[in-house]
Length: 93
Image (cartoon, rainbow, N blue to C red; front, side, top):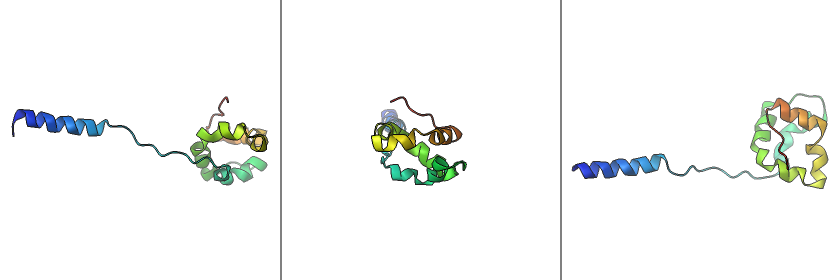
């Protein structure tokens, strides 16, 4: 194989390695936070499942905070404690 062919093959592989990263879109549904219900409404600590869902739903928190029906729950003192324990920062919306 010619040297130029090797360079072309290498270039194609390099482009494949640094190609665009595919990300999964988050489906914003407050129901996804169901594992956090106990922690939001009592002094129970958040579960691992709760923290995982809270991190997953982080891009949706502004949407929830701007919804008058959800704001009281998402912005409650307990919800803030849960977010803090899960190392999820509350966005400024």
